[in-house]
Structure formats: C-alpha cells, structure tokens
Image (cartoon, rainbow, N blue to C red; front, top):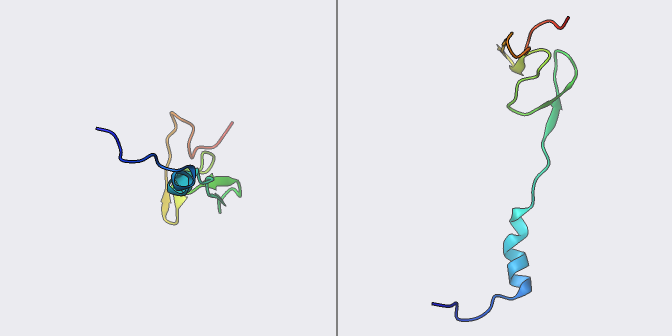
Length: 66
C-alpha cells in the first residue's frame, strides 16, 4: 500500500526541525576548575554533584595523579 500523496519538501523539513543535534552542556568543576559534562564524573577530582565524589583507582578517576 502506498501513501495517498507525496510529502512535500517543506513539510518534510518542518517535521525534521526537531532532529537537530544539541551541543553538550559543559560546566566548570568546582574542585579543580576544569570543564565537566553534566551528570558525568570529572576524571581528575571524581566530582559528580555536591555531596558525591567517586573514586575508581583502576581507571584513574578521583585519585591523585603522579
């Protein structure tokens, strides 16, 4: 079964208007001052949000660098 009529170029573009990729929101890590993505761990300090710091020595997250 085929559609009753071809969808116009303008209608297709209006539908795809919301498909654009949004840039990553970056904030400053309050402990080290380095850029950090929202809801992600800062690699050097292990900071996630106030009251939560993560330490993963195997991956080098939140540990002192030599």
